Length: 317
Image (cartoon, rainbow, N blue to C red):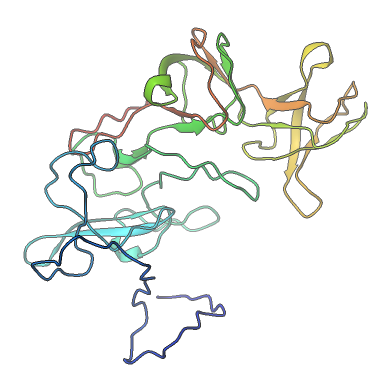
């Protein structure tokens, strides 16, 4: 690797019996699975282990090839597809530029924010702050045009828009607060929740993200609001402070997740005082129709479900 970060390492006993090269995997063995009878054959490391009786979790279908490992990292990694002769047929980096040689696309642009072509990484709704960050299940990166390949990790793939509800949404509401509004658009159909609680809605308007509560009492004239979390909030966005008769609007000047605790700084003083626990939220996503069910905090909102084993169904709308 072209770089390294030297930590304190891992101490273990007994000592290793063989020499090992850089970048070899270190895998915790765990207690494993005990079988009711001995295996009849030998099996290679990373061979697939699956339970055919499970039909409600994991991949369901008949893939061209099962993949048992090594495990793919959630945030970033690289994948290479080789033909029978060992030649690279296709490759990609996701999340970050992990292995530059395996990332397709133009990398000649330098400067802040220009870090090469890579596929966006699904799974973690990482936002400003210390976390915990929302985990987005049923989110996948896919080719925007099924089967299309322009040899660019920059443009060939998208991750379908996904977010979670930072706070509970009640039945009958037409406005939901979300952890992110990235790539959501008016006119999109969205899936809210899962299983028997899932319902479909149409986006009427997209506002700003974030929802939290005041971490302490707020005086009239204050320009800094202590909050439980700054996740989803960004400078320049509009927010609503409190509800009912004491509700007022404000604009975020800055967000702070530092040592003094999470806080939101406003561009102008508040006109009213607000109690600890008052709701602080972005304008959220407005729906074309009212929700038919209540949905708990942490509920996920999706536009396109992954279709493993079938054609991609990703769209911009």
